[in-house]
Image (cartoon, rainbow, N blue to C red; front, side, top):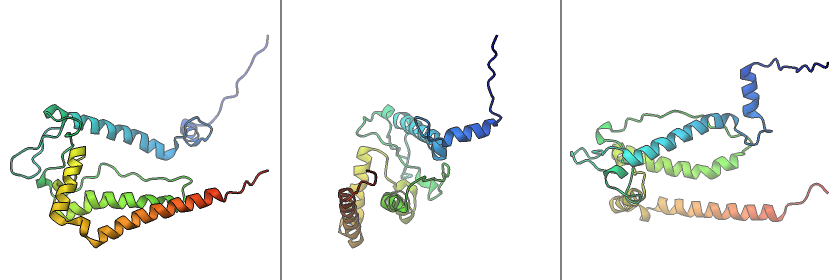
Length: 195
């Protein structure tokens, strides 16, 4: 009779979990950023869907005229929106959680390239509200709400004729053009290192 003995790992469960999370041999790499990102994205997506379907009306102007944005209040996919906070909240910012974004293997070029999106989102969702004095002036998250926000912003501030806006648009388009030219040059000049 032959007995087969298995050798058990003396590794503790936390060490085993850490090795599994950071292992590149898995079919899907999770990493420490994934430990934070996956539940956060699931939560945000769930809250967005629930709010888009069933969020109550909000009196954003303080004149006791609630604005209905969700689907249960008669809106369709085009006109549905998640309406911003009540005007009485003012500029109080309640963070939903701070995430430390770990970027494994990325260079600073990626950070600089995507900083335009962060700058635009900061300007639209934070700086503009500080200038107006309330978060009720923020852009509703929806198709018609976004277009209405852009039309009202242009009508009130004539932002398209502002020289800084013109420079910013030219810079974004010029930056994307230079990125494409750089990528094309690098791709066309690759030399195979292994023969």
